[in-house]
Amino acid sequence: MTSAVNPLQVARFLQVYDDAAAKKGIKLSIGFDFREYVSTMRATPTKGQTYPTFRPDCSPIESGQGYWIIGVDKHDQVALSDAARLFDLSHSNFAEHFQSLKAFYTDPALYAHAEDRCICRAPSATQITGKVAYHGDLWVRPDFRGQGMAKIAAGIAHGVSFAMWAPDFLCALVAHFSLDKGLVAQYEMLHHEPGGAVLQLAKEKIAEEDWLIWLTGEELRSQVESRDRDGFRSSLSSSPVRSARI
Image 1 (cartoon, rainbow, N blue to C red):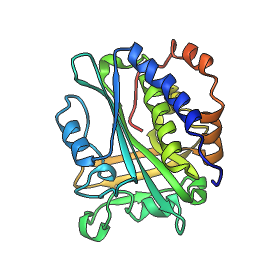
Image 2 (image 1 turned 90 degrees about the horizontal axis):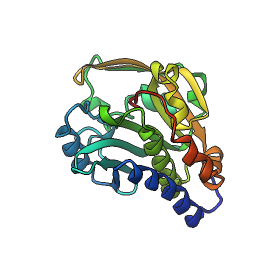
Image 3 (image 1 turned 90 degrees about the vertical axis):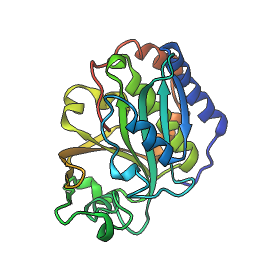
């Protein structure tokens, strides 16, 4: 993408989501130190493990190449999390990056287990190239689910990713039930395909099959710059009953 990012448009977009979170008693913050993020997540009850993609011990993230979002309740207890990082796939594509395990480990030969595998069959995965913003680790505490918090977290992440990187694509991997339960609609990802990742990470005890969901850079720009803020506020009054990893 070549057009300049309009900071005022982004600020207005983000303000809507930040206000919506505040009305639900959640204070949002953004950080860039992933050691701090991992430490906080490990100390958060009911939060599952952070994937190697966002763990500095497996995959260091250079300054400006990633961020995380945390929301805390009135007792300063973590109620939601999300994370994102930028992949430079100008000489590769989503499928190759994940199948090589480089999406999880900076040096797969050093960090990956001999039984680790990732198969990406989604037809569009080979077309996702250039600057790719990858979102993951979206989590909402059980007592806040069904209140539109996943939509709020995803909206903040979309705005921040656009402001920081103006990526060519924004994408994530989700479990199939996220589509069945209508959760992907909350994330406002316009495209989805099965076969995003058939993943096995032996040391992490991870074995799953995920769908690929994504936006093009121009679709992301349109979301941020053309947001019907009044319509969005109304839409927060209804949401699916549970949240999901993204």
